[in-house]
Structures are given as structure tokens and as C-alpha cells.
Image (tube, rainbow, N blue to C red; front, top):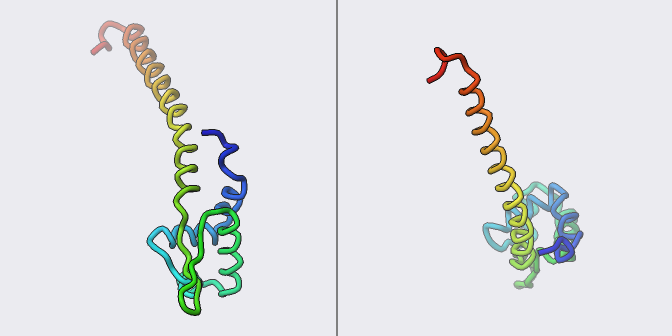
Length: 120
């Protein structure tokens, strides 16, 4: 998966602390704007603005229920983000394997270089 498949708007939307808090809150289930605002101690217009940005980035969707809008997370961008981050797992695994090998070699050399009485 290339970074091109991840819209820059997703990163920009998630980089703002209040929007990240909204996403974390919605992870537990859909919520109306008023509840989101109350739970996060934000003003409703401020919350609506953050939700609009999250919606434009494709991270959330609103459903109208009676007089309110209920927001929930959309799974696709999070799956794409997870897949993209997963590509880094191989990089870190390879680096960790190399470090483990280096430390094992270093330890072996130290044992060989140690005086006879210090060897285990």
C-alpha cells in the first residue's frame, strides 16, 4: 500500500488533538454532536467544526436522527491506515533482527577476548 492511497487530509485531521479525541470517543460507538461536545468539554459549534473536518477527510459520517446528527467512524480509512502502518512492521522487524545479531556477535567476541579466568 502506498502513502498515495492515504489522503493527506486524514493525517491533517487526526493531527489536531480535539479531533483525535473525537475519533477515540467514536471508537466506542456512534454519538450525537451534543454528547461529543459534552464528553470532551467543547462548545457545540467547535465540535461541529471538528466533525465537519473529520467528515471531509472521510473518517466519520453523520446520520440524522430526529433533530440531531449522530456521528460514527467509517472503517475504510482506518483499514488503509492500518495497512500502511503495517508496512513499517517489516522494516522494524528487520532492524531488530540485525540488532539482535549484532549484540550476539558482540557478546561472543567479548567472551573470546576475556581472560581465561573471567570466562563462564
